[in-house]
Image: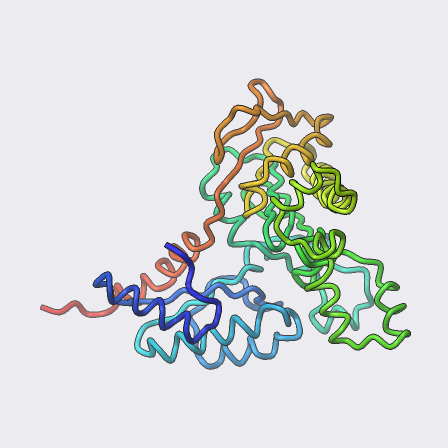
Amino acid sequence: MPRPTTDPDSGVTEIAQRMASAGLAVSAVAHRVVHGGPVHHAPEQIDDELVADLQNLVDFAPLHLPGDLDSIEAARSRWPDVPHVACFDTAFHATLGPAAHRLPVPDAVTAMGVRRYGFHGLSVQHVVDTVPGLGRAAVAHLGGGCSVTAVAGGRSVQTSMSFSPTGGLPSVSRSGDLDPEVLLFLFDRGWTTAELRSLVDRSSGLAGMSGGLTDVADLTDRAAAGDPDCRLALEVFTTAVATTVAGYTAVLGGLDTLVFTGGIGEHSAAVRDAVTDRLRHLGVALDPTAPVPGDISRPGAPVRTVVVTADEERVMDRSARKLLAPAREDTPRPR
């Protein structure tokens, strides 16, 4: 079934119409919320107090939280009598230790909430839930946004995205990590904060290096046809993913499982091949005949490589049911 439109009001209306056509009633609504800030580390039932807290966090994720809040408002207006649950993408990374979440800034800045939070947590949780025997794992969520998370014992121990989803790896249109002097250089030449934010969030990454292309299939085709910009963009991108995975072996003490997920990770064999080719020294080797999704390792390879279809919705559904179950069990049943 196609996803609803991204406009919150019309999207909620479309969902309501689909459910009515299917004869389904809404008993609860789960919302993906990108940023939980320093306080919200687990799914929570949404009330006015939580909404106010999230409004105060907009500066932490200005690209995402305004839309999240608009969607929550639209859904609460449509279904005011059912519980709504916020599922935070940052929650999975609440297990990061001090050395992983601390950024190298003074305490006064850290006290403002500036730290590494990590994102794509719902996607990584789905991998943990569905891939047995992960061991020491690097989970590469490669989609519109891209990140790598080091997982040990089913817990996040390091992750590439930082204070916001803009940090870390270059993505389809985000710069990823960038020398801060680049932005100060542009600021000194008259660029506004809004222009700088648009630069790093909407016109950098693969798009910035390839003349505006955002479809990796198109980039791959053009690179194969000899387009130097597309070839370079893919090389920069896949090298960043591979070096991040390799670097995380220092945190994990080795690598047992490499996971690709997200739209690019699931569908781009060219990206997977380019990344894993740089990881052969770690024991990563692919079977080109293996079906996707699933285990795509070459038989006998020391590191298992798996492609997992991203399913944040399944994690949100289970989380909301678990959160609401006690309340429902306490509700008197009709006789």
